[in-house]
Image 1 (spheres, helix red, strand yellow):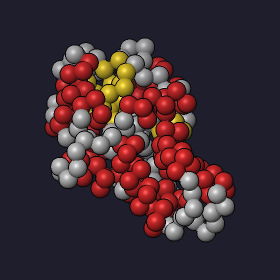
Image 2 (image 1 turned 60 degrees about the vertical axis):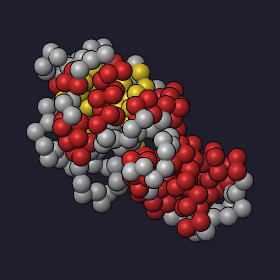
Image 3 (image 1 turned 90 degrees about the vertical axis):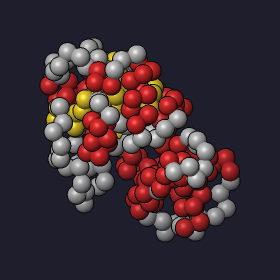
Image 4 (image 1 turned 180 degrees about the vertical axis):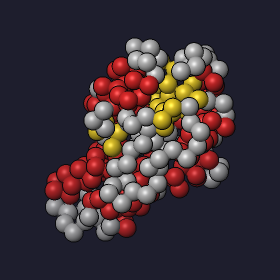
Length: 237
């Protein structure tokens, strides 16, 4: 590994944590608690995630001012509750359900791999998740970040340049001294274009059994690993 890499920045949703299974679990619990029947919570989880990029585009394109991801998730949830004809749930319970994104489970290799990588590298989130979301997720799941950075501190959502280069600036390093670790080729392509180093770790179960994208690297990424433990091996940790 080139010696100039000093920090690893991690995409989180899908790369570090399993949002699909976790949100499905949270939806099922929400349904049981409120006597909601007839909802396919896997479909609900996928629909919620499906509104992720459209909601961020409202910020990216200047349709609305800077809005943290928790609030964008809530806007999407309010829409989905109508779409799925879910009624009669109190505000506090809807807010708790919205914070399901704070309670996502790490992939099985995530904590062990991050713990090894932390011996050598500064570990930061490089996520579109807001700070409170990332902190609560880390506390619950045992994710050993050194620092929480990414969209909210830089006030830009990936794949905007500032999300990547601004994270390096916060760490006091050059873009080429920061390596993005992600399961998404598009994220890595953007990061590479702004001078970051890149590591691809596929998550073939992120979108369920029918996943067809991001199963293999489609760029000349610096490192390709099977999981975070393999990444630690490849980086000599």
